[in-house]
Image (cartoon, rainbow, N blue to C red; front, side, top):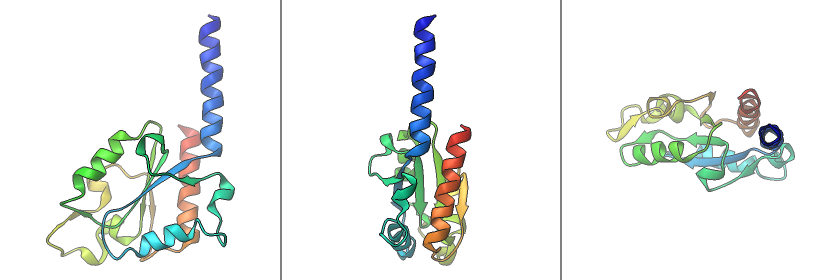
Length: 150
């Protein structure tokens, strides 16, 4: 009885910590890299996304938010799926830019498999070509709110 109460307290503490410091994994599938430049601009002192507790991480097993940009190609379709399944639950997927949402300018490309939501489930869409850093930050903040409800 005491052991289960301790586990519940531990889970509550971990959930509070997760809400206050989400780790974001950014992956660029392919394209012009405009979305990646804008995403990395969020980390600059001008926008300072770290004030919300967010950090850019390269390990999917430690990340809470999967920010994916660019259209999914035949070469990286399996990589996107593998990264998604390596992330621990709860996790949120954010599709950044027109290419990730609807293939954008690459809609007729021979190697374009499709938008991200045909490969993995997407929770939040950030439109734009490329989206502004403010829009990307707003999408990540909405992802944090989704993490709080899970």
